[in-house]
View: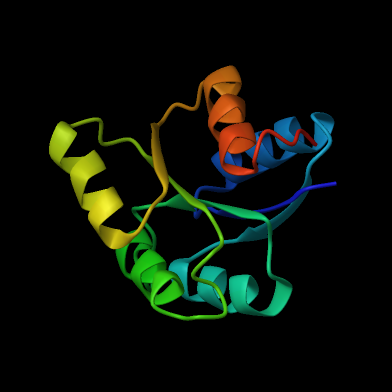
Length: 124
């Protein structure tokens, strides 16, 4: 069972997405800000991280940069999740080290395709 770390500060988004991913067979751990996300990524070593970019304490851009510059977490794929759908936002996410980018509101089937691609085609 693939393990996903969902870093999302909005409780409703976090609950909805985590339940939908769990129904698809993924084990989901949540963090409510970027600092907690970095700490959980380091301690739990998930198979993939879904990172909201607009987070309190430490935003998703900085959290991803920290993860991608740390040898222990560098290889964990990160998908940026953001309500900002501008081309420069995707560019900024990729420059921060995100492996993929998706917009909110989340379209589950599209997101699942990106998750499965980054996990090497392995499904939950």
